[in-house]
Length: 260
Image (cartoon, rainbow, N blue to C red; front, side):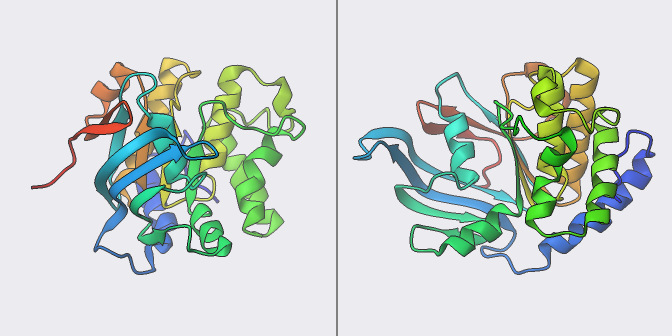
């Protein structure tokens, strides 16, 4: 059963998280411990790929690394997260994700396997309105063909943690903005991904819920999950002092995690 209940003591929660995510890293990783590596990556959109969105990005993030993704509106933060979530592929440059190569030459099955190890919290939630909260959250586990009794245990535990234990059968279409956000977060982390990407994950949350989410993100990072979190919330950045990637007009202008 998932061990992220709000009632679980911090020490026990850390031990349980370590035990559950450790198997994710049993396979070898290229470039030592780098879980994300971009080398001169650019992305252009449009049928003729004539609209430059991201330009000449180079950075790496190690296993367990946490990076804030910062920059003004229109800087390319959401586009970079889409790239890391394999919703699109680089137009130029070289990218490794979870230690594996990402290019148009790879077969579809390669990308399916990679995406099963990624959790994504979209800014617009991307829930399926006709499904219940529980069925939305269960999707990653059902794609992995996990046993249904195990899925139900996981759903109850994670929904209790995000404060939706009494709403598991509610239609997603009936949820408030904050409830939709918490459902999306639960779906992103329920399968214990090796990489979590989050686009403004605390926008619709109350302050106490945002702090709880941030504390859990920090714990997951400490236990080996790689995190990239886009935000405009300066209070959150001050609460969790971790390196940041600064984007401006699709270019990386500062990488606080860079090593000399």
